[in-house]
Length: 308
Image (cartoon, rainbow, N blue to C red):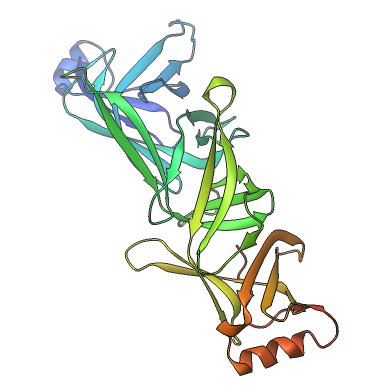
């Protein structure tokens, strides 16, 4: 029976029959059929619904062939091209609602919202960061007509947060629930402003699929007496996000000034920013001297605090 798929607000799959009302009445069929079950992704990133066993029907599996069209803060859209049990009268876009997060192996996951407990879609490939500091997920899928594999990619819009020395977060734009919390370790504790990057060592996956990689967050280190110390990160199309830090200033070395960065609970992030004194003017040096007059190290709280 020809028709097309959609979803309701509870992420149940709905099949709408593309038949005249008279025909449906003759065959005692409803306008739409609701299918409930558990959502999964197969190895080719097709959507699979493991349907719930009922009194009249056994447990079964429905595969929806197509590609992931778009992701946003709280939903995933899938462009449907073929179904394993029906003849589609048109290509259709299916939307699943929920939230994005990372699992304990630093893999990307999407929790499909349900009344009882969510279903989890796991994206098992390795994700990357593109030139605009955004997360991009790349996978391969078979094209139905040619049967050849084609590369697809998904880009997540958001911004980074430095949570603490063992965790870095990526918060999705316009969402209060969706964010990726990654377990990570600072690769280098000493940062020099000209290099403009914070590096983390991170492992993704487990067992044979696990890979160690370096996560590089690119930006520009800057300082002003009004805002204090801040890191400016570009996210493409002229979008800049400025992060200011609380820090301890060390003036013990005649040629260098060291900022020991702190998190939002004033605990050391394990990251030290080292400047040459010659890069600052006389007024800046006087400002640091005032901060350090009560000792060799003094917490610099000048300016606005907008933590990672």
